[in-house]
Each structure stands twice: as C-alpha cells, then as structure tokens.
Image 1: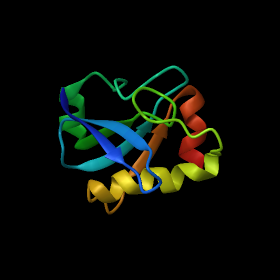
Image 2: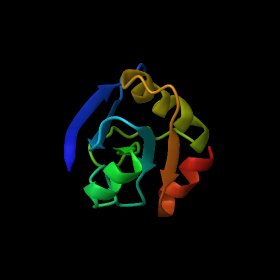
Image 3: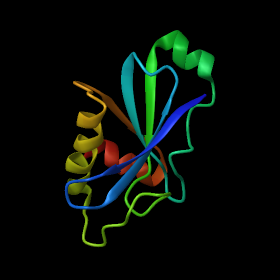
Image 4: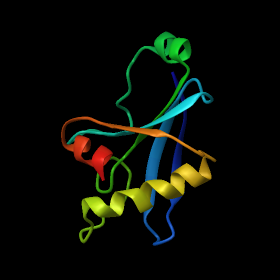
Length: 108
C-alpha cells in the first residue's frame, strides 16, 4: 500500500519524485524503475513487505515520471542524486534494486 509520494527539490534545482510503500520502517530498499516505468512500480504484496521488514522506496529516475530530466547526466551522477532523498528520509544504510534499464543504476 502506498504510504506517500514526495517531490524533493535537489541541491541543483531539479525535482526528484519518489514513493514509499508500507511499512515505513525496516530495511530500506531504493528501487530504480525500468525504461518507461515510474515510482508506481512496487512488489505489489504489502503482506510480504511487512513479513520481511522491507521499507520499499521507488524513485522516478531523472526524466521519468515526475522527476526532472538532466540531459547531461551519466550513471555516475545517480549516487549523488539518490543521496539527497536518502538524507531527507534519514536512511543510514539502504539497498538498491533496479529492473530493466534501472538495473544499471544499482551498480553505479
């Protein structure tokens, strides 16, 4: 179940949009959507998230969904992009997951 959508203004002025799915505590997993996807992608089984204690955070990558594009960006820019919402959410540690074109982002 969706527990909230946030638009975060990054230090460079762009907006990065993300959604959190319940539970909002537990081990944080930051998800990078595939090409054509958005923050609306999630595992779809709230009971499973609760059972394994995962705080699932799905991010609109730059130029996807409601996140602003950055035409000059590279994969190496993703860690600093995602660090700002991680700090905003007070995540000390988190895992990353990516699907399809978002898979490259889990390795940057």
